[in-house]
Length: 363
Image (cartoon, rainbow, N blue to C red; front, side, top):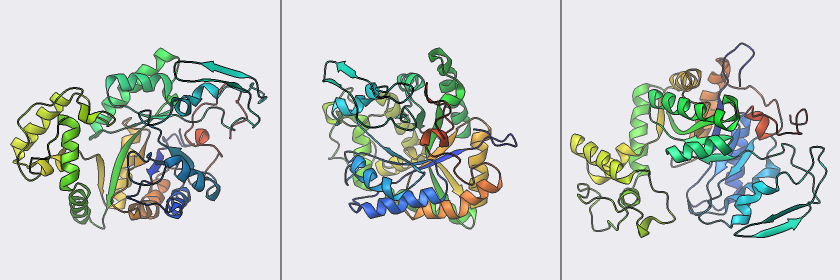
C-alpha cells in the first residue's frame, strides 16, 4: 500500500499472547490498545501453544468490544478437527451477489452438505495468515496465503527472503501486492540507545528460563535431554530425525545443520546451553530510542525487506503501550503509517485485492 506522496505504508499487528491469562478482559484491553494505534490486526496463539483459554473463544469475546482492528486466531492442524481448518471450501457458498447456494463436500476426513442461512462475510474470503520459512513453506504461502508470518534477523536476510517469496507469486497468477510479508519482531525502547540495550539483555534472560532453554534444545535434538545441565555445554550427539519426542511440536527445519550452527556459536563464544539458546533464538529485534526504532522499521519496508511487522510481546503486555504511545506517532509523522482506518475489513486494512464478485463492496 502506498501513501499519496509515493511512500510505501507499512502494516503493523501485535501478538496478544499472555502467560496463563484466563480473564478475557485483559485481551480486550490489549486489542483496544492496538486499535487505538491503528494496527491492522491482533493475533492469538491456540491454547496448545501457550497456557490459557482457546483463541477462538477469547477473540469471540474481543470482537464486540472492538470496531476496526482485525482479529486473527491461530488454528493448528495437529490439534484441530479437519472440518474447522478446511472451512475454506465453504467460503464460496454464496453467489457473487451474496445469495446463498447449496454446497457439498465429500472427503477423506468428513462429509458435509447444506446451505447457509446467514449473510456472506463482508470481505468474501477471510484473510489467511500462514507461517513458513522453509522452501516448501514459502511455496505453499505463495499459492494460498494473504500474509506470511516469518522471522529473519537482518535487513540483508529480509531482502533476500522478500525477493524470493514475491517472485514465486507469478506462478500462481498473483501479483506482488497479493501477499504481505510480516516478520515477527520484538521492540525494546529506551530514552537512550544504551538504556534500550540494557533492557533488552535483561528481557532475554528472563524470557528464556533454564527449562525453556532445554525445551528449545529438545525440539532440535529430538531426544530427552533432561540429564543435561542448562549451564553446561551443548550435547555432542546428533539430532534424531522424525523423533517421537517432537511429534506435535514445531521442529526447526534441517535440525542437523541447525545443531552444527548452534555448536559453532557455542564454541566461538564459550556459551552454555542456555546462553546459546538466548543468543541464537532471538527474533529480529528493534532496540533503541523511539526515533531510531521508527526509522529502522520504515527502512525495512522502503528497502523491500518486509511489508510490515507483527509485534511479539515481552514478559508483560506493557511493551505495546510504549510502542503505541511513542513509536506509532513518529511513523505517522514520517508518512509511513496510517493516521486512521480507511476501511472496515481486515482485507482493506492490508490493501489486499477484493475477492471475485466483491469488487466495490469491500471497504
